[in-house]
Image (cartoon, rainbow, N blue to C red; front, side, top):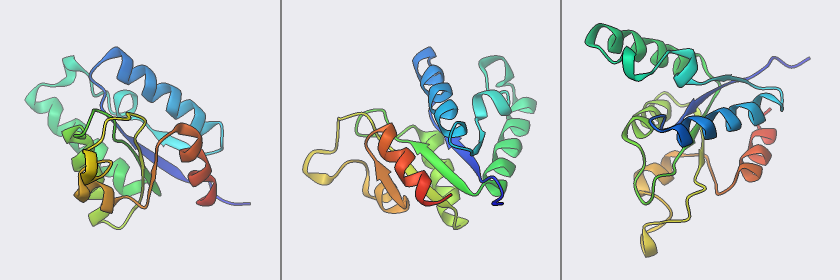
Amino acid sequence: MTATKTIYLAAPLFSNAEREFNCKLRNQITERGFSVFLPQEDSNDTTHMRHKEKQDHIFQKNLEAIDNSDIIVAVLDGGSDVDSGTAWELGYAFATKKTVFGLKTDFRTLGSEGTVNLMIEVSVDTLSTDINGLMDALEQHR
């Protein structure tokens, strides 16, 4: 029997729509047998937790979760630019040699320059443009 792989879901979490999308994505990933760390729930990253002493706690908890994850899924929506926190998480994951999957469902791109910033695009192992493509990619890394 294969051990369950853990996924860190890096994504913007500042609007109701973003948080709902993240929960929907987390649910679809867990239905496929993965364990998911979702910062908006698992590290209590909320508005009322954003005081200096709490920020250090959130940062450390998320950092440990990235370190303990097998795969990072980074939601790269937001137009032509990626959420800054997601970009940091993705960069840290890349630097620590984690497998990183990008998901960009937002059809806005950089035009002839590519789908997302080249530093982001080159950092991901796979870049999917829909949830089904992401799920197919995850199945290959089970």
